[in-house]
Amino acid sequence: MMNRKWTELLCCMALMIPPMGPVRISQGAAGKQSQKQAKDVTKTSSKISKTLRADGAEQDNPLSGIPSKKEQELIENTDFSLSDVPEELLENANVNSEEVKDIDGVDNLDLHSFTTVNKDQSKTLHVFESPVKYYDKEENEIKFIDNDFMQSNEIISGNDSYAYENKDNAIKVYLPENSREYVTIMNQEESSLFFSPMGEKEVPVRKKTVKFLGEEEKVAEYGDAFGQGYDLQYIPQSEGVKENILFNKHDDIVC
Image 1: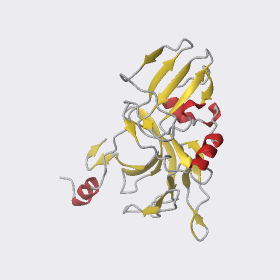
Image 2 (image 1 turned 120 degrees about the vertical axis):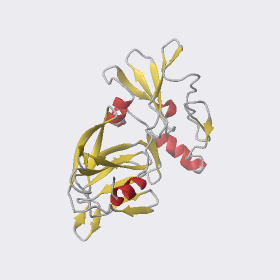
Image 3 (image 1 turned 90 degrees about the vertical axis):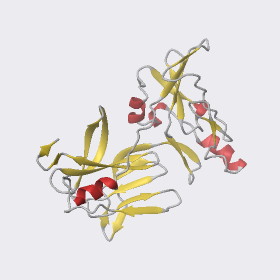
Image 4 (image 1 turned 45 degrees about the vertical axis):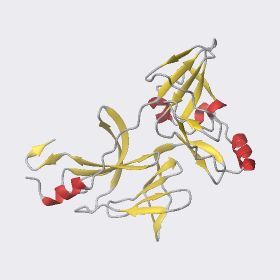
């Protein structure tokens, strides 16, 4: 029988449902469209006032409240090239960089899509359930979300700094050097959420790539944080952070 400690731990775990994969709409020079992974997919509007999701449903756009003067500045400030798109996002969208020459600006202001211009002059729209861009309020510019890990210079207290943070997002995730320090999540208004696991011992963090359901993902792992064989992992995401608790064994059962 599982002991109380692990029962309580499992009760506190949240089930993370992975977002729908990218929907691609390819448009050739003659204007004919072929649809993949979805039916009746409607291209996302680039207007600030509204957004059409991949299923054609209209939703509120987070950019709709900005003043008209800033709106024009935003349009002028937002100009993407292929090098601005994170490598992981290109891989997720199955974009072959050797066949693509640029990014089309038609949907620059849409947070859920981007359009590639192919070398044969055709265009491909890539639509995502979760946002792949965010609005940088300070610079009044749309940017691609890049949740890859980078070394952090953010100070926790005194001379101590966090180990890692995600590269570029409206939601910043700061991960400490060891499992006894606080994980910090901060938005652009500098509202913060702090939490730390109640593990058995203090363990250092390390970056690694793991496979989950056949997909590779980069994680920050605190090995044996809850005892030998029980690892803690964090993965920054578009709208927060995902926490994995990895059971390598339980009593006499080895996974």
